[in-house]
Length: 284
Ligand SMILES: [Zn+2]
Image (cartoon, rainbow, N blue to C red; front, side, top):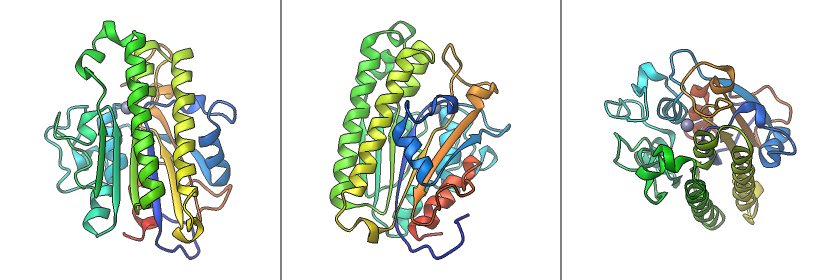
């Protein structure tokens, strides 16, 4: 899973940005993600045929390293899951005694006991930023409103600020930071101007999280690996759930001491994220 050569136990930051199409990534539109790709790799990650292209099953596969047949999650209500048998990478790191951070914006079942959650069961530090009136926000009328976009943007901003402060001050060994505004924009407006504006904002936030890591005075010695990953894409008109290439093509970017620039991508399937994270952290 990891590249050849010595890899010391280290620190891992995973940023999950929900609903980002692979074909919108570019040096000018997403410079932070692009820079990680230049420093390591950026690769398409097809959602396999057995996995519905919804957030629940895709994030569950990314978090646990097992597919639907293992974790049992097929939709955005996680009820009936088998996460006890297939824990997420933050929980495994926490149970191994590593310091961990879970910072989630907006979507409760990732972090809270709602809708069958939490997907991420245990963490040393846990930050959740609610989107006000989340139920209303998913109402069709409200989805198209500026207020919904602004509310999700504010939640992502609060999550980023909290996570960046913790990363810079405490350097947890394994962190997962989730940003949801891009996916909301896709649902609300399709993959046009508002989607691309949300993507630009998310990329700037990725850049701030990377900067927080790199602000560590002992940065090189801490042996950081940074992963940015999405769960699925969006149709031109917005929405997901089918097998269209723009929906079923997710992606991952990663860079770190053990990843050579231009190396073969170490993540080409969603199941490969969790083992890479745990190995880079020194637990496997
Ligand atoms: Zn999603």
